[in-house]
Amino acid sequence: MRCWAGVDVGLHTSVLVVVDVDGTPVVRTNFPMDGAGHLEALRTLRACAGHRRERLQVAIEDSTSPLTASLVAAGFTVMAVHGVTLARFRLGQSVARSKSDRGDALTLANIIRLQPGVHHPVPRDTPEVLALRARTRAYEGRRRQLHKLESRLWSYLNSYYAAALPCLHARTSRDMYAALKLAPTPGAARRLRPRRLSTALEEAGRHRLNEQAATEIITELRVPHPRQPLQLELAAGSCLLEQLTIIGVLEQSANRLHEEAMAAARSHSLWPIVESFPALGQITGARLLAELGDDPERFASTRGLLSLAGLAPVTRQSGTVSTVHRRRIYNRPLGRAFAAWALPLRSTSPAAKTWYDHRRAVGDRHNAAIRNMLGGYGRALHHCLLTGAEYDEERMLRG
Image 1 (cartoon, rainbow, N blue to C red):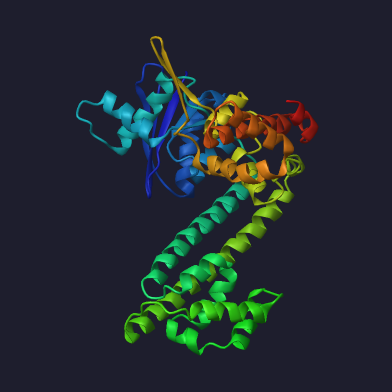
Image 2: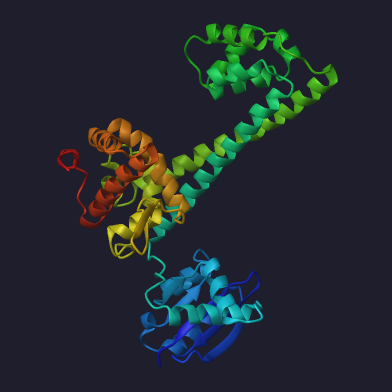
């Protein structure tokens, strides 16, 4: 008997519903989110699927849960259904617009039963790629947290320490953080001596012209500017030191994740192919490898990859009117990885520079030309990953 299953994953308890070809529920059961519950769900699905587990499609919202990994490992075809798709389908089926765990599980099963070919199975990536993806996404999260904290640091300094802003803009963050730790207030900057700051700069990793840089930084920090009351400056300086401590911890965490991600990427069998592309020898290449995965059947065509990355345009036609727009719904981590590749690719590859200049010459704006260039290199990367060939700059130059 042909069946479809839907699983609504909860924090403590999940619901499994299996329907037949008519949409009639065959199985409705709850199971706890522990080892025994997972085994119970797998036994139930095995009993419904029989010997052909791949024919039993299972719809689930959370594609990253341990239950999803267990279902894929057991041989079932798992479909990841977006929560918005589930909500829209539920509203179209239920007049009362009611929501329940059992109702959601039944709706998930009916979605893949009534919409064959619309939803794609969860990729069967290897554990190595899944581990690499966890590390690269954690690294990206740390870098984004750092960027937010550094932006807040600028606005915070503007409230009581305006002389530090031009210096922070002109010098590296490493040098300025070392200076601000010793001089968190304008009063402390007037008491700071070049020799002490020079030693702090050397400890922070600077090895050339330390005394000259220390003298210049102290001079810039002592530029006259509107001052706050002394007690307020002291309190703000203490808060600034706490912010710098948090930034330092995040930087150390990001550096450790960077090293772990690069070590995991270099040990993967596909890394030589990714590394052969321009500007993909570092963390950007590791991010792309992690997001693309190593399942050769994930993308039916290169168009699917470009659509998932947000590089393929969307064409809408109504009557005789046809419009082309950029894609706004796509996989954000994959799209950010491609976006991080754009600038170093255009700077290091003559073929990419030629491609970009050509698109600008025919009338594309900067963002459109960048997307077109990344689309071409995305197709090349997909082809090389499938065939095992490495990147050829001369072939890209020939078009």
